[in-house]
Image 1 (spheres, one colour):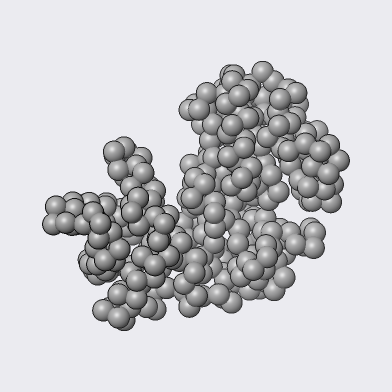
Image 2: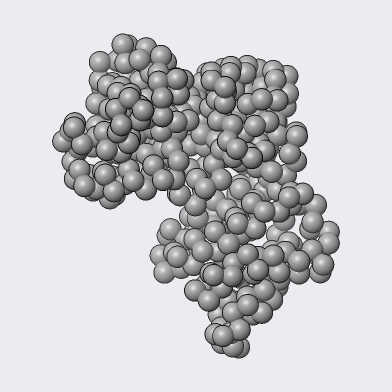
Length: 360
């Protein structure tokens, strides 16, 4: 992996060239534009390699990948073709360290990893569809580039507050993007998402500027582990930047519905006052629940980054911390929380690898 890292683009391009030449029937499983897909392959490989000596983490990661790949139409018989072309690409570009022993190790590793994914997909198939169709029933443009979408899935959709779903629009087939649920599970089965249109973001721009009530999208299964542990009664410290406030709001609703009175401190970060598009909702929740405190952190007004705002409050040592927002904010937030005395095992966020493509 160290040898191919600097030439990752060449390796992944060659891999896909091999795959589509040798197995042209697989091309229809992939989006027309392959730029993001190429990045995702290498990130998945790097993540797996990073955790190769930590079986519980690796297995959970691979199981989630296997379940998630069902929505692409991936079947068990596709995995050997991918493995064959992956080994072909690695052997060509890692020539400095490639030998029969290395190849045998990669074959063993890929076979084991792919079997974990295949088994997870097979188990998931017994209890859930590969995807759900969902009709957009409300489209609320909160700012010029942020919309709140309400969807009605065609059958019950299981998820937990704090999780996210992958979503595909009719305008960009086979292009899936992750969006966090902005509310706890509701009795009417409706789902809410906050979407920010980002430059060159095909899916996000379609959802914000093109989608209308009546349009139908597809949803993959819920994912993510940034959920509330209801077996504990300690406080929650929540940092939400931009549309990252969506899962934070969902977790607050989740705690409120359970009748809990554990303290919850929410720091809502935005560049300008105008970007605090959901502050009224959070302030209403604060009025109804004395255990909830909401603080807006506006960069332009306070000249203060969201992670730094927590320094004036606390102490946070007994709190569970939740981070949601752009990858840079999460990295800075982890540093700030550790400096404030929050133990690493009490800091929760979705993986930065997944967040790289969230919301585009």
